Image (cartoon, rainbow, N blue to C red; front, side, top):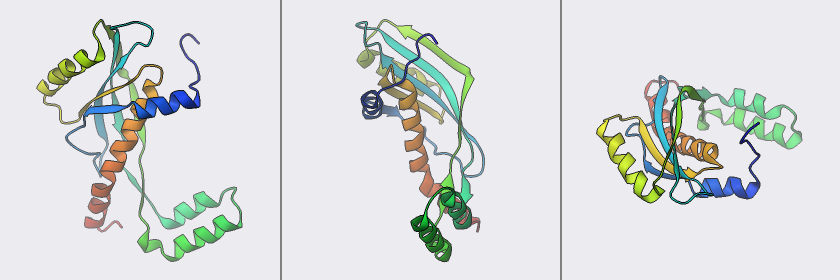
Length: 179
């Protein structure tokens, strides 16, 4: 396929380390319905000076699901040995102390677009941030990252957003008597 290549471990790490969130969504991932995050990811072309790429799209974060200790222990047991069985038993015994959430994501390609701008990232990012903030979309995010590993940058952002949302999601589930 044209333009696709496997990232090396170093490239993967570099993408993770160089993902910067300029603007987080004002709201977290919703507990009881899907959330749609509109992202703008800005990267610099590594081969051309002053050339940046802008990727815009949306990600659907499905509502989190509670994973019960019994369900977790069944997932854990598939293909694992005796120590895993012992751990699963301890989870089942102390199940009321465990609360796990499962998040699902869907990147919407229908809203996806890429364009190039002949401007360095350090000048382009603040300008795009101003434009996006003027839209008053509480679920928009602006990121900078690495061109070759742009998808890794986007996934890191979503994992970080899930982690930041988890505490409130758990409180909402507890408040509703679901855990």
